[in-house]
Structures are given as structure tokens and as C-alpha cells.
Image (cartoon, rainbow, N blue to C red; front, side, top):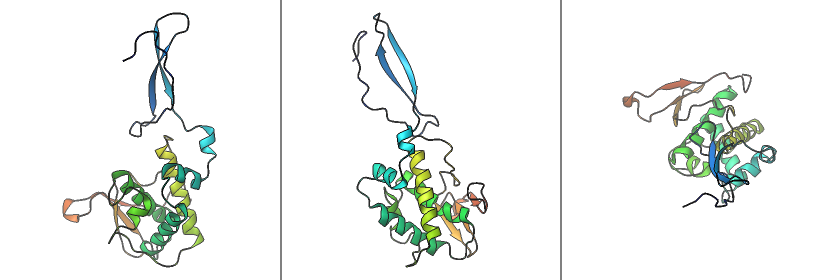
Length: 195
């Protein structure tokens, strides 16, 4: 319990992920009186963290995961799940889908655990440089979002964790079973990827 006049050391401010613009309160004694001031600090991604590469952000968020294995697994998953899909937006949404599963701890707590979970995704041995680029771009946006940045360019709403495809496009849904009347989302174009 804190009393008026107690000194408080702010060690680390941790953003609260479910508030759009994270804030944190702390108590700071006013130097000339015993009145206590409560200040709100706007927590934004600091400039040093904005300068971090996707790999550095990934290691900071998932210290025990291998970044390269994760990127290659996700690229192989895109190659398997999006055969015939031309839209970069639609292929990027596959990575957002896995990120949504990570957020919900559905089939794993990391991208690698979710994507390699049994009977969830189709893999191919091959992958392209474009697929690596898509994976790194979405991972960077997802990680920045987790660190409190807003408007990172999310293209798939958070509730959408499933998809089905027809060889030309993947349709994303918020429920696994069709009998549960899922919301369906068809992503083809976005300003982010210019397609």
C-alpha cells in the first residue's frame, strides 16, 4: 500500500493489449508538497523499437522460437494453402489467420506451433521469395500491434481463424463449422499491398 509522500520507481511500463491506445497510471509524489499526482502516460512504441528489424521484434516477443524456421514454415504454408491465388492480400491474410490463432492460443502459443499443428494447414516443399516477403511483412505488422502500435495495416479482423479455398481465392471465416453460420470474408484487394 502506498501513502502520500512515498516514492515510487517506475521500472517498466507494459502496454495493455485490449485497449486501443494503451495507457498506464502511476503515482508520483510532487516534490514541493505532500500532494500526490496521478499522471497518465501515453505508451507508444518508442523510436528504438520502431527501428528494430522483424527478426529482432520476433526474438523479443518469442525468445525461445527460431525466427528462420518460423518464416520458412509460414512461407511453405502459403505455398500450400494458396496455390493459384494471385492476390498478395489474400495470401497475407493466411498469416494474419495464424496470428489470430496465436492470440487465442488455438492450436499453439506461437506461429510455429499453430502452423505445424496436426491437420491444420497444407505445406509444400517449395516457397518463393515473394512468400518470404509476405510472411516477414505480416509478422512485422502483427508484432508491432502486440507492442501497442495502432493502425499497423491489419487486413483480417481478429475473430477470423479459419479459411477454405477454391484454387483462386481463400474465403476466411470466424467459425470452423458451416452449420454454425460463420461470417465469411473474401479478401482480394487492399491499399497496403496495392493489388
